[in-house]
Amino acid sequence: VKVTGVTVTQDTGELQIILETPTGKLSQPTTVREGSTLVADVQNAVLALPSGEAFRVANPTDGVELVTVEARSDNQIQIRIVGKAEVP
Image (cartoon, rainbow, N blue to C red):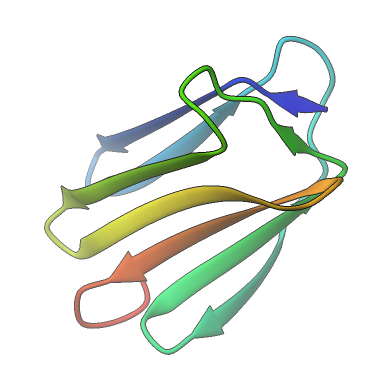
């Protein structure tokens, strides 16, 4: 499934990361915590952004330092949400 856009918003105090696809449904991500970072891996997904191979936004909310979405392999993307003091 191609991911053609990424949107990061804050709604009622919660961070939302929206992965846009022209067709298809993304698989449920697997998540792990690494220190103050939440890592989500999405299988069977290909990053196809108009701006290139990665997405990043700094300081989207008070408690979040960085959000990145990157291609990890032929059919996997990884979302990393870095908290300023703890896992968001």
